[in-house]
Length: 212
Image (cartoon, rainbow, N blue to C red):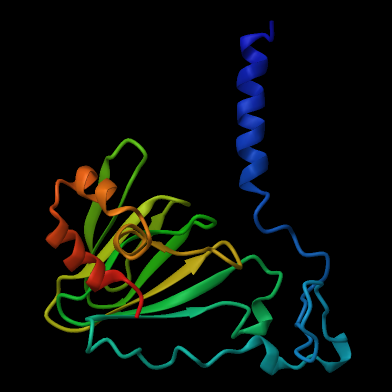
């Protein structure tokens, strides 16, 4: 029989190991991808061809268009900002109209820090014990959302608001709860039983969240 102390050690070890297994440490100072190649194998520019412009990105200077839905996000990854490649990080600019909402969602591969650049944002997350940690954040405040936990944001101010989110993964992933539940092919009967809704209500939600 394995001693209890050894079981505890193995659990802690595995938690620590898997926590480090998503984005490995780079083996070079940087790796600017070679755009002329399309391959599953990483190919970096020769360092002599790398310039300062490879490490600068200007795509989030202006807010996104949030007038239609009340919310806009501009993700920034190595796909659009080559200087991020292999560095184990990415970020996003999120803009909110008054009453705009960033629906409950989670990032399966990253912890996020959200810094309020402008406005007042009701922000929070739900842990695995269904406990809610939420508060109204003001300009200059920052909140952290632990990896894989559902979190949400809403503009509760009287003017547009902006958040800059940073992730500790080059590819954090994004799962929006409403779209994942009602915008996919989950059987209607299951959704009706799980949420206590009738077929017309399910159809209405599906129409709203199924990708166009």
